Length: 191
Image 1 (cartoon, helix red, strand yellow):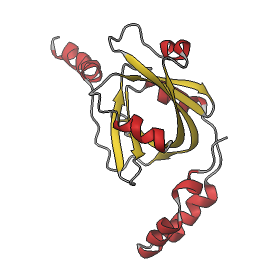
Image 2 (cartoon, rainbow, N blue to C red; image 1 turned 90 degrees about the vertical axis):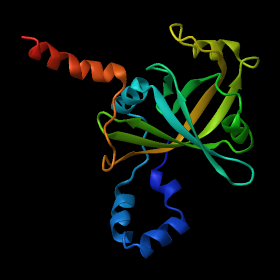
Image 3 (cartoon, one colour; image 1 turned 135 degrees about the vertical axis):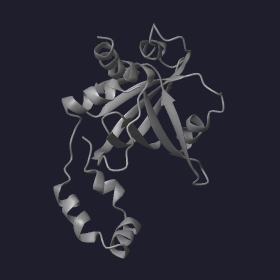
């Protein structure tokens, strides 16, 4: 079961920063309310509706790397209340994230919903599943209507997660989302 996000995020150096900048009392209240929790149904639906995520990893020298991963809506798959997976589609073939994760399987995800100003932070550990090791699993991650080659599967064991406040999230819309907003307006204006 995932643990409270504060168990991972509130390290000694973070607590020192909170003290320095005067937010210790505020964050003590957050820590007191933080609970170990599994993915609830609304969080599962949120994840399954996404078409992109940002994934952060560290290399052997401690340098962070953040990569965008995406696909059609539904490319993130729920395994159970504490595990998700997705197809690692062929991209620029630099393999920075995969290389980093082969030496340090800890990862952080930022999952955004720009139109609704929602952001989910996830901490987890990754298991990389290569096609030759489990072709059935990797093939199950493919999306028939999406013309991209699945190179491997990425399984994430969720260690903690937290919903972040909407402050400073600027709404952005995909072409599809904007079309849904625009159509009723154009319909009214054409009458």
